[in-house]
Length: 573
Image 1 (cartoon, rainbow, N blue to C red):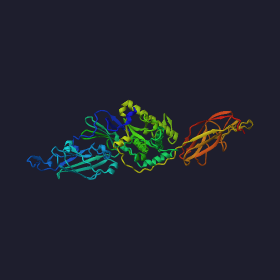
Image 2 (cartoon, helix red, strand yellow):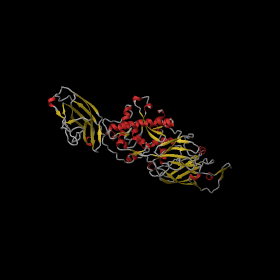
Image 3 (cartoon, rainbow, N blue to C red):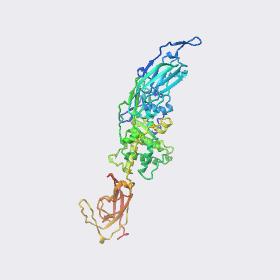
Image 4 (tube, helix red, strand yellow):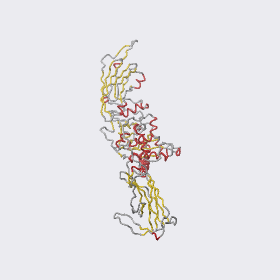
């Protein structure tokens, strides 16, 4: 089943439409149209064509044969684009992807039948998105056979990339034939935000083209902020190093988690805010439809601490690709998540059977099966990450069963880059947040031999409770339990200690009692101390647990560990 994720590497059958949660929905039906071009049948939406020809339309060549004057032919300048609306993201993709060169850039000149040899000059005025463009060509038989000519325009890449809010611009052009102005073209064009990504075109006859690989242009492994974030990811633990696929599958999982951990700890929330003033389905005058999805850029997601399924997947994919992982966007009906194919030696030849899926919308999740977990605790955070992997694997199986495996599509970023889908180079300043390292409690308890066992030297057990009451029970045996509590970033800790579960204990500074917390006035990286467990039994089993309180007042606990106390005459007092 997972072999289906080897990719959307070319446009394939199936059209997607936007869903309220910011995902995509696949709509079956129709035959595939790989050229994706729209056929404009309604000239009223192509712009105003004003003819300036008033002269005679015939002439005589040297052989006496009558020949049509090319200036008198039915020349047309038309709006020829994937949609009636202008999408900066689509045009940016055309500029960076040579494989898309056959798609018209928005202005097309029709080639009349008898126009071979005519000298054409098209002047397109500069506007918000392009500088003035002047194109001169001699009409050839091939151009006439094709039927039209779409010139390359002088686009302003910065203007495309920085198209924020939607608006409109005026497209004006003048066509000259053999030095004579024959057409003036004027059209007011609505444009979309650069955040709006075209992912499907549907023709009136059911033909459709799947453009979902375009989501890959929102994955930007070149973002200069990534290096700063990776530095913070490494600082959240010990002995970390990003090695890509050079290790094992477990190494890949660890690297994926380190990145997840950073965004989870800084509070990245699931946010399905994709509504804008423009429609997510654009129906052109000729009845063709364009489906599009709003996608936030890496920096926008980071600054807003919010992402929907596509946003979050593109953001993490940017980092995973940066560190050398083979990452893919997984597109299923109404949703998007991630896949990473470990190309490590331990799974060589079985890479596709070892694909790691990751549900990115669970970065703000804190519960698993009703149990609460703390993302700021390293152990808990890893459990939440592992749950997101398990959930994504379930989603693959569930969608394959419900919709068919063909509706589980993978857009591998490496394949998309090889095909010419380059990232949108838009980078905004972000203040990379420095997080306190998660509380990783390395709690190592140990028990000494019995250090007091003479009945004539009985200890009176006592403890401090809410009323400072004392337990006057005599205890014959005292077991010494030493422990070491290790954690990073001592400056972020205001209190540390350990507890013996439901047992009476004392610490080396005197009796603080059952369940009482040991305190250190000055935080330190390694806290070592001794506490005493009293009993009348020659053997005892107790559970001990380390804890600390960070500077924000949050408690962090180690896992409970069992300590076995056994009577011995050695070490008697």
